[in-house]
Length: 406
Image (tube, rainbow, N blue to C red):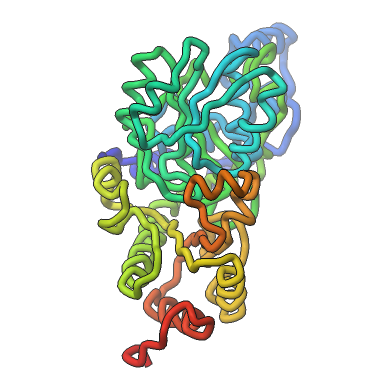
């Protein structure tokens, strides 16, 4: 895969109102019209360049939407006040009462909770399956199935979805493939591989500064317009609108995404290989023993590496908690959820970001209580970071002392 997303993003150029190098921020909730006829036409969706009300759209949100469309190479993109705002809008736009969804069994806990507990209010059923087993995917599809939903790299087990093969299955059954690409922006170009709709939590790598929540839907122009329809658009009517000030801020941060992703990947790759050499149970798509390693190689944009996410299983929740507390005391990062920050973030997924999944189901998935999910930061001296991490592990008896590192 060699889609030049970063170049397309860099080529976007907007002049501010007074010639500024950043576009002016539209800090208004409502917009005026010079004629009543134009207002009517705007309500009907028959005008371009006219703005009605910020819940519908604003210049700042459209600028960010254009950048997101360039990231995935889709016709269009809408932005939302959170990743879940984007995800739920897509699902509710596509599904009606009595419909069925085929979904990966390993997904973000919030998405899992929505699909497991919430959509049943609307008589929408969901089959949670092993998305890496293509035969199971095909067998799970029924005449009522409306979509296949997965994550390009799953949260938190880092399974790799075969997007081209899933796309073929979806097309054969006349339904869309929806891919959450939050873990792998730039590394994987999901739409170029066959995803019909790509969702992102902009909160994470794309914004990169852990100062807001935001989401996006990248898709065809027709689908994005349907989400904004004033009469039946889920994005419009559910009100998950992004604030213009945040949209402007995220757009500026997107300009450095290509630099940050390379460093996140470089650091994560180094740590994963060191931890593996130490005999730890580490999962990272860049390791040759990862079940999806070859598939990742076939789908990724090599320039951006295997991503900034890895997991370590230290055996028990007690050891996991002790290690995370120790690493935080030594200023290696933060015991916190989320990802994509400049500092490393770590959390025990079973008791945090995946806690919505019942413990019995976590065990079936192979999600150990001792599993720590790491979002590796932008450390300048990753060798020093590794050495200090190892010291924490030695102090807790997770690793035996290595005198050669002294």
